[in-house]
Length: 433
Ligand code: ZN
Image 1 (cartoon, rainbow, N blue to C red):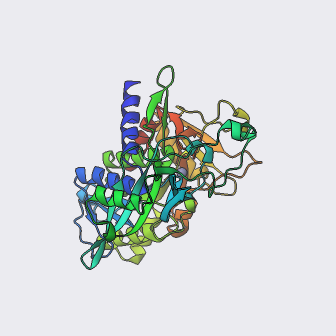
Image 2 (cartoon, protein in one colour):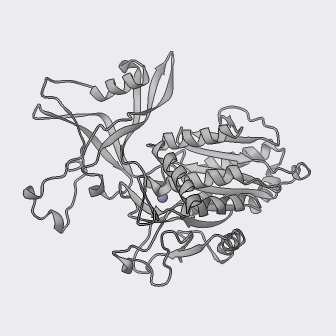
Image 3 (cartoon, rainbow, N blue to C red):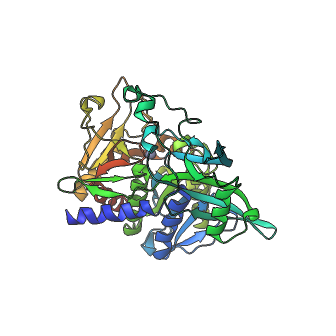
């Protein structure tokens, strides 16, 4: 159990340091740099030697890392790409431009909007703060700076039960009315731009030099291990930072003599992936093509590499719920601590099929990792994820997996303490092939 807790603890620490997608990507870059990886810029020519580990970032919020095969004699002809894809973003509230709203000259609250589909009620009555990216004037240019107001700052207060007796019978929350966070007491006189002033202070820049913002609320709850025997983890953003952390760790540990290993972390999965840096962009295709070109491969050889490739789409899965076991499929029933979840979907929202699923199963078998299966109930439409979106751009054999969790898209989610270690082991085995 000690080993399992070690992996889970590291994962929770990674999540705590990653209050926004921008921070998650910066932390992944740090993990890579610490192992000698070097950053390439999309706007520059790519030059790299064949033994190098490299990564490229788009929009500060998506990252693709790759490593060449290790054996010199095989450098001439890698077999393909071994790719794991996960996502850096989680449902949250985006702070709007010009967000400050005074209420009766006493309260100052922030105007926000939903980012992704979260369980709204779970965000209430918790300490919250603000993190993300701001655009700061830099001479004649503009530079991006990450910001995390690392203190208890905001709260979205519930309405008292006395003011709505129907509350426990189910309530419809209006995001423009019910979900705005209380920020400050402004009864001492009108103030303007307090949040921007606070951010400027935090970054040591002038308020006037902040020209843009991508700021999100995040819950201040620390990840923790709980249960009679410490069987579970409770943390914000397990979807999908648990898979981000596990895939990067497995990527750093697993070296292949025949495949180009690729670890991709995409932003904007929670809003459909259709952005310049999302899975539904050319980011993966562009990167793989430039890697192949850097190795001196022509287009035909690039297509040969793609044909020999495999992609694991790694995004968390629904475990059987202790209070609602009937919500799970009657026969495909993943449990927390039960290991890797292979996801299947008849209409192929999940890319797993007989062949790709078999490859994951046999990897798990060889590495001694438990493996379970997920399918939606036939009368419930499920969510979609990265796999079939990515493979629309780079058409490679693919399987969808995840780690079992409860309360997906709640402000804090519950998962098994053992499953992070299983995921790292699977990814390591995949990358070692
Ligand atoms: Zn997800």
